[in-house]
Image 1: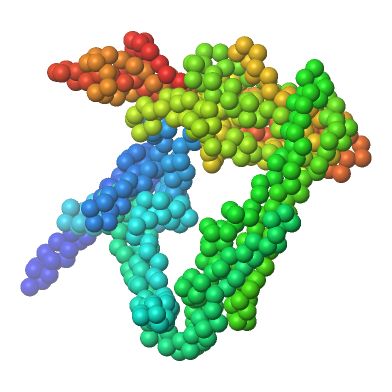
Image 2: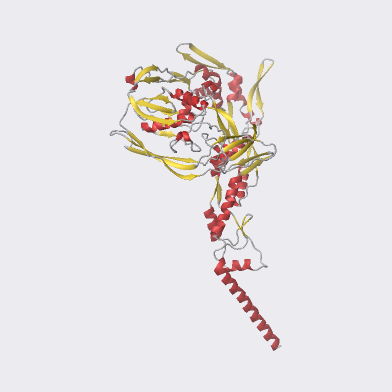
Length: 630
């Protein structure tokens, strides 16, 4: 019995010793090589980061993020699937049309540094945890999430653009009039239930996917939207509405100085559509929808009363006024004030109202001295050598649209507004652009030459720039980089403010391949300077992109985009104002520009047998090329 106890004690001691020895060996291994690594089976979604140090884990997560961004995230509703782009695709836009999809690259933001810190700060990386992973009979996993966030504003904007059909506003119950056998009857109409994207569910699913680098398709769910006013609720106010209808048609008029009294009759069938119902608790009240009244005035009356003002224009030859056009006052219906007035008249059971009309007054200046046009205060220049015929034509038409324009003191100039409609009727010709992997003609190609020259003229004149955007990539017509400006209806636009106390007159000159805009006015002594652009972060483009097409003969090659290096650029614009000026004596603005690397894009006629593959940027030269818009 004693011997047996001894054996047990010895065996127990040996077992404890062996266990301690195993612990000691494991500790030495952990301390020497695993202390700065993640435990085995450290999982982030399906990604196993076990045994990786910080640098290794960071590279793993970086590759996963790049994959998500390259593929984007798809959203699906029924049979419709649309991909949310998270990375710029240079082939989808032309040089002068800013890529609207680039804004969605910021819709999703990963914070890799925060994720790594979270992994290593909270991994329980002690000896006991290591021992659990080390022993083969213990299987444990620790799951983590990536530090990610999204921009609700950008996500909502993208959903609105791509799934607008899923947003249907509910329509409250409403009144209408129906005539039967000469008798008019007030009808209570059924409400309509709307629907909307279940935003809470969608954002939750999006966040769950982002946390584990999962860009599988997210199914969009919808939910019903109910109006505040139901058909049964109309009975509470039916008698009040009937009184409004019984008051009869509404007559609106305007006393024109030349034509006399102009009047329009608005019948009760129209008036009843303006009635809306407000709900406050369990109480329903009559209101008038001023938006509907404004819409009626715009569509049926305003165009018959409004008269556009004619801006004064002048032409200077040899430094003198050669011809000019006097301005003419205009007028327009004050839609907001008139709608409010009609609403009040209807409430008060009055059935006649005079429309409120605003006069558009301009200075009726008739001489050079009044305009104070004395000298050139700044000149901008650009060169368009190498432009094809249609581009040259469009530059000439655009210059004529700006020629002779007068900008009054305090007025903001907008090139988009000045150019107006850009189409064949305005004299423009189509110029090739590349969009969605297709080369198509678009009217107005070349107008960015006007925008760039106007921008440089405003800088030379010391005027404050209120809107300007550079091109998507560097274009030879607008070098040096950083001094260009893009224009495209309705955006981007080039805008500046005439903050002088005198008029500014724009005059254009085209001399060979050079275009100039001279800004005439009266110098107030300000001095404007710009530094030489600093160009940095030069990035080479991707290899040539080949697009097969049926529009060319098999093997025929036609390049539509030239390769351009990407880069960043900036320059400083300083204006020193004279003594006594009401603004800060010296103002400096930095204009920053970012240009994406732009790959060469070539169309190749589909071959009948051998497939076409991408070639590098240094492959055989293009047989022909076209110039993108602007």
